[in-house]
Length: 227
Image 1 (cartoon, rainbow, N blue to C red):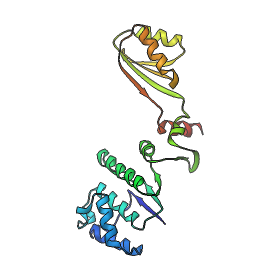
Image 2 (tube, helix red, strand yellow):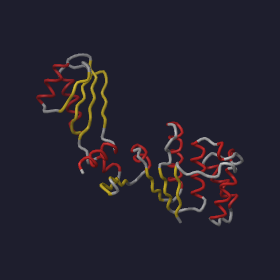
Image 3 (cartoon, rainbow, N blue to C red):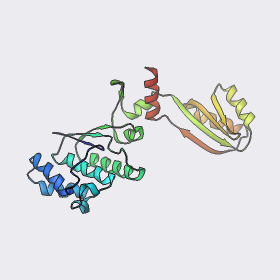
Image 4 (tube, one colour):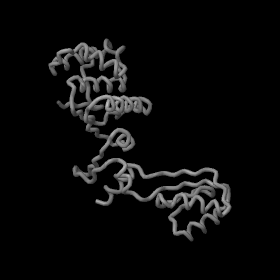
């Protein structure tokens, strides 16, 4: 069994959520349709919306109704196409939490498509990057991020710009100053502790240290631009 849901799906606006779902349950020949709808509505926290007209729902509520529609026939594989598109950050986060919970509670394979790499990193166990319709990379999120060896180190300091500059030049580091009290350093992850302690040993007082590891977006941009 397979099914599909998308943020761009739409159901009949003038009928209720219950009526929409019941129609699909009959199309899927679900024997215990009423119980199935009730249980899924409770799971996705829209039980109180079953008698509401679909057109009156918010975008986030419609997304959850579409999830339920796609799960009525107990699919082994579900395709989710941009499920959080057009959702505000708070609702998108809640929607992702529901997907994570359902994925954990049920033996189901999710084929998830999105342009949001943070979502992909959060939801997916394995990632395929497409560029111009062709597969350009495939691996786990962690292994893909390991393809980029550079880590960004952002240091905020009180004073000592010239001392920091001298230290970084002597240690062959790529860096750029932002204003007079922030330096951004591109380096290998394993060298981060050495750089921090090295600058500190020069008598520099650092007020903030931020380490930015590579993201899936960094990986995708590197791969797509190299093709």
